[in-house]
Length: 205
Image (cartoon, rainbow, N blue to C red; front, side, top):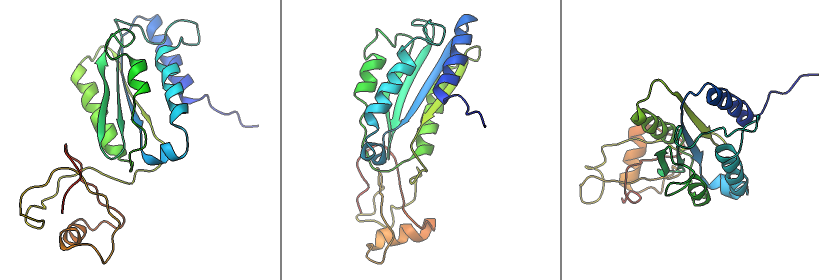
């Protein structure tokens, strides 16, 4: 019989508990997939419970896996775009917002799965802490393969009034695309969907 490995959360909690015993600080950034497929599968509530247990419950030895005032925890969620739900903080139990509140208000159900953006933004957050002596970790939670990506395309000469565009688009390729999107399709040679992510509303054509 093949022995199944321990669940990922349990392995990570074991590592963090060992770090706590050695009094080594932990800087943890959690990137959570909040895409529409998560909501449709009915797993948003399960993820919220798991995150709450992971961040706030005691570790295997009955001691907190993360120590208030020493360890720093940050959380963000991604669908098409990135949302910072909890800026990295050592007051994740008592600060405003608390980690529990950030998890409760995480907005599941946003469209596509832009995993690369989630990992990139988590890395930016972790790098901003700039503490090489700590245990620096990113945890990624996702339910499947990415179907979107972040990029900046030169669409100013192709669309509408010729001005630059901010925001994002998602579209299935087809002959009914307006000229702006057809040109964009040809420029990236992408066979399924195109996604542009920057701060702001969906890209207007």
